[in-house]
Amino acid sequence: TNVAVLNMMMYYIINEGLVDTEFIQSRTEGFEDFKKELLSIDINHLEKVSGVNRDDVKAAAIAYASAPNAMSFHGLGVTEHSQGTFTVMQIADLAMMTGNIGRRGVGVNPLRGQNNVQGSADMGVQPHQGAGYLDVTNDEVNKRYNAFYGVDVPKHIGYKIPQMFDAALQGQLKAIWIIGEDVVQTDPNTQKVIKALEATDLVIVQELFMTETAKYADVILPGSSFLEKSGTFTNGERRVQAVRQVVKPIAGSKPDGQIIVDIMNRMGYKQPDYTPDGMLNEISQIVPFFEGITWERLGNKGLQWPVASDGTDTKILHQNTFKRGKGYFEFNPWEETMELKEHAKDYPFILTTNRELEHYNCGAMTRRTANEQILRDDYLMIHPEDAKTYLIADGDYVCVESPRGKVDVKARITNEVKSGILSTTFHFPDIMINNITGDIHDSEAMCPEYKVVAVRIRKSKGKYKKELT
Image (tube, rainbow, N blue to C red; front, side):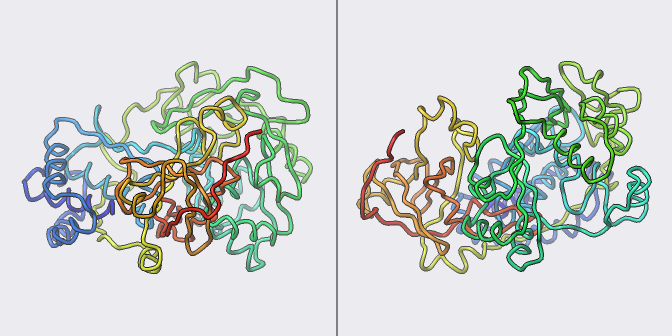
């Protein structure tokens, strides 16, 4: 119910007269229509559905809007919802309506879920954009790509990940090349993902280890870890940082960039061997905001893009304007996810997934370290009242069932979750939590809704202990 709570916050900021009128008038558009929609929301209803006291929301709104400088941080807990994109837009609305953007000590800060997500996005991993966030359907952009690369670059918008799996099941996707992502363990609705991979003629997996996804590969390309190659990582503050090789790649493996170059050469598109300085030289010619980035200039602290041709970087973005010119206010009402609309009656609990500090995502790397001795199992967080109702004790195994399937996972009784809410990690493939997560995605970006899964629970019929090897 993030959208509900943030609409309440903005309602109180307007009602208390705490908007930055000068910033709104000079830097934004659409505010009056936005304001009209916002002031018509039903506070009673939103307070009820969110479970958040209106006085607490009002206090938070006043604190944010009254502060000389206020900044916000958000992560996957915001985006992994059916209304995730709208929540991010609201966070931007909050910053614009209070003037908390474009100067030191303010702003909107997305915390990336993995270390080089920002860099991947900058390089055009989105199906509708090329490197530099350039629109692949734009004729001028297409001409520029064609001239630079000497080939006809496709102009159509490709598939996002959920669309890839759907297309595979419909016989419309013949090959997939997965680099460094264990989709079988980390993507929702695991059995559907497996069926999609099995329906794909050619599955190529480029990996460090034999992951759950690699088990379904027709071809495995052994990649190198970040310690075994040189390149760049880009973080959430747009800082492009040099990553320098410290050990030689394990025999038989190669840096990801070199593997891609080798394939390009085999396919008749001649390329020199991969080097970090050579790669940045290419990028700087096609991505406008990388124009002044060179391997030598990165040094120890990196550079924040956009970087001018003389190497001057940008500490603060949006000081005078936004990419679209003026910031745009767009109202979006809170709507219940289809997951709960369709299944809450038979599956009364809400399960949300999370990560633990000791393990990284699917655990493909961290489970192979001594961290496995610190956290050996996935666990299910259950409120004491719910545990009492279902006769579940700490350490008991609980059968968690959704419309997609069921898993058995160890209980941890705790007040860290509310009654009616369950939370679990997904680090261990022997549990395979994503067998029960669903196909609901964010309406705009298609990010899976890992944070809301309708489930029911019972004590497992056969209490068992994980065999330690």
